Image 1 (cartoon, rainbow, N blue to C red):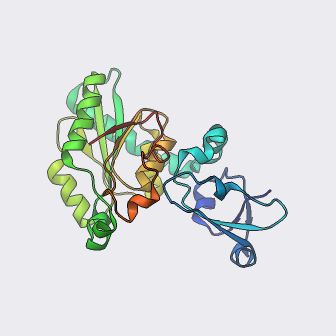
Image 2 (tube, rainbow, N blue to C red):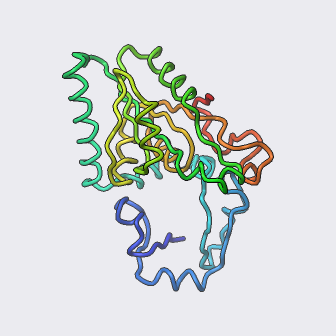
Length: 253
């Protein structure tokens, strides 16, 4: 079985180690293949993985469950390595903000860098709210900060968010502190790479934060009140949400 992606697919350019066959006509290939859909976007669906090795298959899925790749985790991590240019930019961001913090605080020993991803803007639209989407509260984020501050003597929180007016304004007014730095907007692949390179992560809602945390191998604090009960969106999750959030992550609200 061979994974096929379009030559111009963004995933192919961001992750050069991806073990896939890149072809120019992937769109036409997909049109002639058997379509497989997942039943729930944020839960493990074993039927999604039942492929016929003798037939071409197009998988339409978010695969937003760690259970899909728990048996091949190391291989996935080996393939999902950002291209060197992105890694260099991401590391420069971390280094520059860390250097700035150390110069002003005189703290350098055992400094723990915690990457924080905040998503709000599009989830606050009436249609999203009606569907069941929720956003993380500032009290949750303060609690997550407190967790790391109590665990480590020296912390630096780097706050990443979407470059839209709503999220930037909310971050400016609520994410402050002597050990908190709001990171300037960057390309999305650079932001994700930077989050994955921090020592630990705090995430709110959405797949961008989820994947950033999964690629990061430190501790992850997640917001565990991401969906309105009995909503349309809640149908995409398992009842206990254990398909979505890895057991090693720490939930708070």
